[in-house]
Image (cartoon, rainbow, N blue to C red; front, side):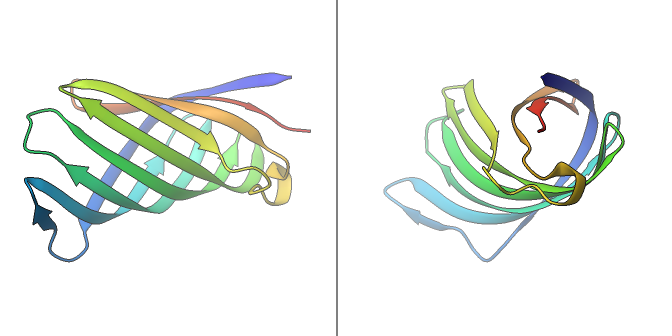
Length: 131
């Protein structure tokens, strides 16, 4: 049975090293730290390589993020895999639970997450299943 978790989260990114630029494309690397509230209460920590183009609003990133906390009363951790692109301002984003990454009471978790940014505030909608 699929369940839905929703709530706000806070995110901070820390650039790692100096980005390299070749042919107008900047490649960078960031560390992610998140604090989740609502149905998912916990933290997220991860790494995120990025590519920023010279075209306004066009970029890409991938990330691996370990989420640790409580999801609808069940404690444990799991890993999100992110893949995102911006095509001249139009966002395409996929966030999926890495298979078999769940631990403790979240072992066997599967699912997908959506992110909304409204007036500078971040919100998640996580549809998931547990055995």
